[in-house]
Length: 136
Image 1 (cartoon, rainbow, N blue to C red):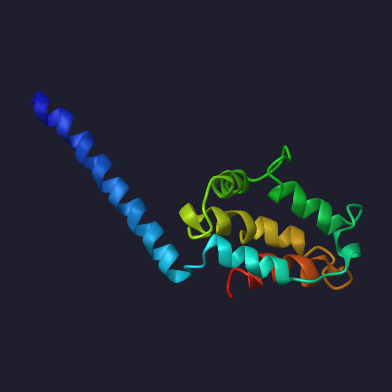
Image 2: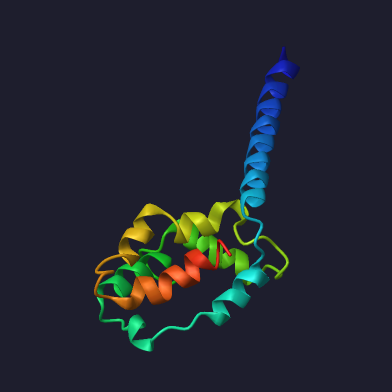
């Protein structure tokens, strides 16, 4: 009986680990872009510097979520930046869904799109860098 009590949590842990690894594999197969490919794309994006004016609402709202040094940064963004600080360029960009959970989640996209009809932030900066470079 004692061995059964010990074995059940171990089996459950192995099952959960297998499910998590399978989910990560499916996400990476969906979009296998590497950090190096993404970085190369980022370097090709051109935008008007005024699009990053820190006094504009979409810039403030978005960077408060995605800037890992911000007190209100999303946990996935902090995890993403920790990951890329220690990763090689050949590794997948969206490991553990950090990228999608940071840049492509509803809250971040909503912030980036504030005043998108009159602001160039979303169309010239955010969308090309964080959406188009991801789906290249």
